[in-house]
Every structure is written in structure tokens, then in C-alpha cells.
Image 1 (cartoon, one colour):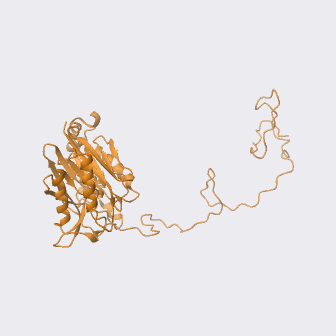
Image 2 (tube, helix red, strand yellow):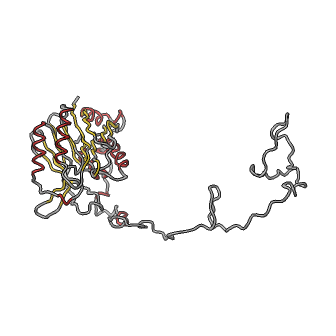
Image 3 (cartoon, rainbow, N blue to C red):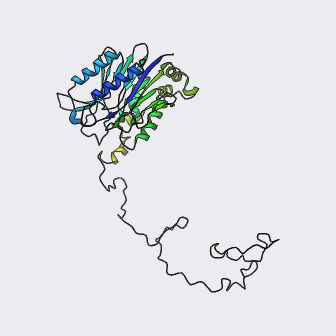
Length: 368
């Protein structure tokens, strides 16, 4: 067994003021309650919230604060991410750092897939993040929307990553879809997934930990939470060798594939369809992009249509119904015996009271 204890911290994030002191306070509480924790992961943009107006230079005092905290508690620390501005070209990147127990920044990762078109002003990173915890295993880092693109996890796990660490900032209605993606990612790539979301300006919570069989080990609700989970990386290695539950050996199957995918060759033309989807932009009110049909803005039907009575042609407005005959049985005296009489609606002709000895269906056929 190769155990390792990783804790996620789901906390309330302010958008207009620093959250750094709150993060340090929660880290102190976490380590006092669960001193066996060896790695701590916060949510995306937890230090300063989702506004890039608070972007900092690559080297700053906030990082030094986190380095001191990691050194104090002797933990691996990923303090979410923050906007860092490249001093050479002014481009802003959503960047996470990995700090070891000695307080050293050993990796920096810039989010590869900013949530465009909504994060249109954020530059995309191009370098993957893989690092080893000595005598434990190999870890990889992605940020939020990155996990919607399986190519990112494919690249990481093909390099041996066993635990995928994913700080998240999702405050929108698609969080449940992300939970499904996290579980699918764990099964597809036979790895642990830690997806830590924030609260308030930092998200709607529902942080998630999934094992390589897609089993949910923990899911937070909509309140603050800190959850240390001990993982067993020997299970990852066993599953990758023998298959999930002794079944699918997906990494080896991908390795031994008999085909390459022309979609990844941008000059192949295989992806021509993607060029028909229009620009990557925020939808506007009433947009009909992609429908390719002209539909009136409003349509008032000529007559109501009820379930079971749909028509394919426009209905004609009916006139007044004819007045009922005084005698409901009028005109039925000469019906041939071989012709079944029409069944009157139950509401119009209630069932007559049954006589003793009468069986259903044995009475006279005439309504008279």
C-alpha cells in the first residue's frame, strides 16, 4: 500500500478583497484538526477572486506567504490559482503553483483552456504540469475547464500521472455536468481526481473526490468544508495493470491502438465541420445562431391542440357544436344487429344502475 493524505478546502471567496488571510487561517485549522494531512488543495482563484484587475507579477509577496505556510506545516500546498501578469508582454495567465514542504515553488501551471468566450482576456498556457512526490507517486495539475478536454488528462496520464489535482471555480448551472465529467475522467484514465470548488464569488461548492473506479469518495455540499482523504496509489497501479474491477484496461488499450487520429492534424481537413460552428463569442438575447431556420417570433395557433389530437396541418376554427337531440336514442331504432352501436362518452350517458343477477355486457344493446 502507498497511502498519501490529500485535503481539499472549499471556502467562501470574496471578489473585491483579498482572501489570503482566510486561506492561511483555514490551513492552520485543517492542520490542527487533521495533522496527518500531507497535501492541501484550494479552489481556483481563491486568493483574490475571479477579477483579473487584481493580477500580480509572477513574483509577489502573496506567494511568499504561501511558501512560509507550506514550510510551517510541512505540507505540499497548491493554493488554488491566481492571475499573474507577464511583465514582458502584459498578458495575464490563470496560474497555479505547486509548493513543496520545504516552501519551494517547484512547478507553475497556466490554465490551458480559459473559459472562453467569458474569460476572453485571459491568455492560455501551453505547458503541462507533472511532478513527483518522492516515494509516493506522480501528480498532475489542471484547472477547471481544462478537464472538459480529455486531451489534457490524456497527456498527463500518458506521462504516468496517478492523481489529477483540479482547482475549480464554477458558480454556474453546469456544475452537475462537471461532476459527471470528473467521474468519467477518473474511469477513463484510471486515476484519482480531486476537484475542489469554492463558494460565493468562488463557486457553488460541490467539491468532489473520485477514485480510479469512478467511485465518489467525498462530495461537499454548499457550505464550507475541509476534507482530508487518504489515497492508495498502489490501487492505481494495480488497476492499470489488471483493469478496472478486472475489466477495462483503457490505458494499455490506447497504447496498443491500431489507428492514429487525423483530427489532431490541423492540416488534415478532418475538422472542417468545426469551422461551420461560428465564432467563439458570448450569445446575445434572442440569438438564433445555429438553428438555420426562420421561425416567427410569435405564433398564435388557430385552435388549441390537445395531447392525442395533434395535427400536421393548421387547424380550422370550429363553429358552434350542434344542439343535442331531445332524445339521445333518436335515429337508432333501425340499426342492424351486426353493426355495433357507437359508444357514448361516459360523461354524456352515465351507466344505468345494475339489476340483481345482471352481468356486465349482458344487457340490451339499445340505448332505449
